[in-house]
Image (tube, rainbow, N blue to C red; front, top):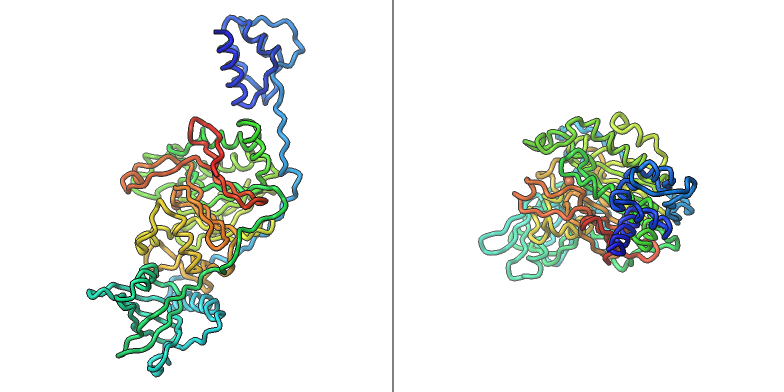
Length: 497
Ligand SMILES: [Fe+2]
Ligand SMILES: [Fe+2]
């Protein structure tokens, strides 16, 4: 019986990050109620060192020596601490557009110019839409922005294409099944190239070419054995924010919990990226106040500051962007969190703020961080994308070279430069919003949807969404592998490839 109890106590102390010597254990077991003594020791521990004086203060213990240290500090050597951070933030200006007609025209013009420049690199001559009517014989390639797309009753896909000067009507014939499937994956307001020929005033499409990212790439790796950890959708302030699980993750990060193998992983974490919905906000949806534990927006961000400044070791650098729940404008592109809201984050040398979408170069890896507000638009327009498969949303955004192409869905504020165009090919693309963990590698780009730290809300249940909370994705820079660490099951730390 005693043996079992001893085993239990040792296991519990180890899980909580304490190491215990056989002698100390013996002292605890000699007490009238060993379980109670162990619990009180854990409760009263200051850090990981407990002096025997504390034992003495507990009633019913039989301890003689006053100098003996009974619980020793765990040995945690953070490998990432010895590796210098290498951070380049690429800040793009988020403007407050007036919403005038000129703003819209300039915004779409800029998008068209940026993406058509990518499509023009393919060494195939481009015909302007204005000239296409005259080229009745022979195949031509045009570039256009989709202003209309619908399925006709005969099963063709009708598309209206626009460029900077004019527009034309185009058709994907019903008998070309493969191309119909491709056309189904086109979104309104995206820019793509189309091969085809004019016939009776209609441009008959026989190939669709999306700008896409470079092919023939493999996942980037480096010699430094560091780890990127990805967070999103914490929803601090919500009653459903899983603070215990989150706290356990932070303890793991500090090397206080988990097996030696788990701690070894924690010791290599050099960067944490956070893809928005960091706080729950207030007044985001009707009845939200009933689901809030912290109803003051400033207090929500104070809690965030405590976590990031006090709980995350300084050698770990954090890059964060906002989401639609955060206290910045609820329209893409979103500016970074303002200084008035998070002064401590601006002071902290290891915390870096960007807007959404945001770009950063960390240890040579080009990162695209985007909350994922446009996910609902992709889901409503593209049959194969769902909230449970956010990796397909990421793949489509990369193909379209735009994180939020559709203008008539989730709010967008137009500005002179369309900073939501994916101008460079990212090595890592990190999003949130889906509350669903998902990973894929698309043409060498590591795509990570980092789930959530909020339990499934009533609203999500009604929408048929099931969250995958408290699972931390990590990317190993040396091996190029993506793993996920579970903090969802009874606080177990489990590595899944
Ligand atoms: Fe969220
Ligand atoms: Fe969100």
